[in-house]
Amino acid sequence: MAGTRASRLGLIAVCMAALVALMFISVDPETQYYIDEVMDSPEDHEGEIHLRGQVAPGSIDSSSSSFMLIGIEYSLTIDYSAAAIPDGFDEGHTIAIKGQLFNTGDEWILMAKEIQTGCPSKYSE
Image (tube, rainbow, N blue to C red; front, side, top):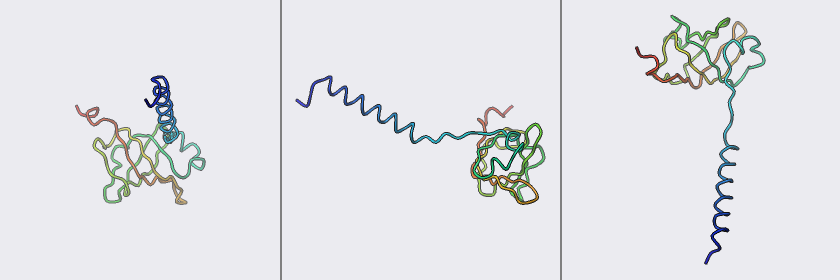
């Protein structure tokens, strides 16, 4: 026989523990910031960022692939030319964006790589 029942169960337990450990190691935790947190000191957040805010009413400009993301005190121009637009994306909705925050000299812009919305059924009336 290949071993006792206890040794086989022990081997399975070790393998399962190793798989769980690998899952935790491979997960890269991302901090999601609210727009007002970032725009208080945007220099501290320059580069890759995961940001949350609301699409400003009347701000979606499909010709320039941009819109304004607003918080309570601040707003930020979002360039979505490199991102797919998901279902549920519309003015007034809260969204999460992953992208690159940079300063053009005149203003701060977020070049979106990924846009995430909540469940589309949440917005239907």
